[in-house]
Image (tube, rainbow, N blue to C red; front, side, top):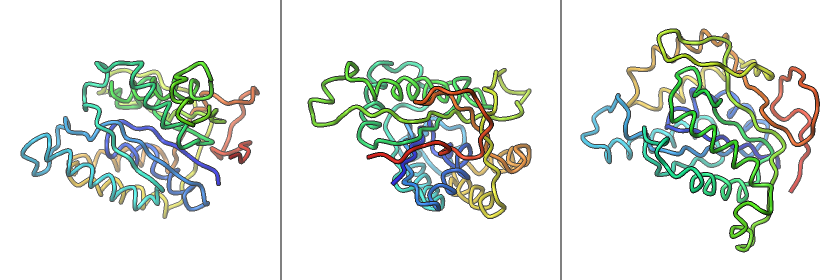
Length: 249
């Protein structure tokens, strides 16, 4: 079975940035995984939560509801601090994500671009940096060899993609987006499900209008940049994240 792994920063990122693609590949029989690094406890929009702990619980539940709509095989929320990812031990987080890649053994990995996506969120940038290094180091015997002594083996993902876009948001901090190399044109049903998955994050309801506006600006597409692949080649426009991917153990 082919496997797809998505690294995100906050509950709702999985739907907002990757929802259509997650749904499409799940329905094609691909095993899909989402690893969200924070429970989103620093969000400005907090629903009825009276504390960070209550908000964390609410957002974890919303995340699972969204993953169910997107038919994600396994969704996991880690415990890194929302809004403070740039203050974490870089190497320790890379080790954590490397371990998870070696355990799940995805053929394709997707995450944010290093600019932090169209919102320029610093947490998004940090996840991109960690996921990129982990993607490379997971395949090397000289990186975190203690993990290999526990029975794991190195794993080299065949492709790493950054989510990107064909527009920016002028009122946000400036970003330099990665060029689009891969365009996934979503069907109306996939867009509807993506919107429903985002709206499963009810604590974030003040963002719903903004989200639907960005959906319209994306022109029913999810756009990606092929950042790395295990077979050197010249870039060509793609319409499939698994183009050229070979099924492997």
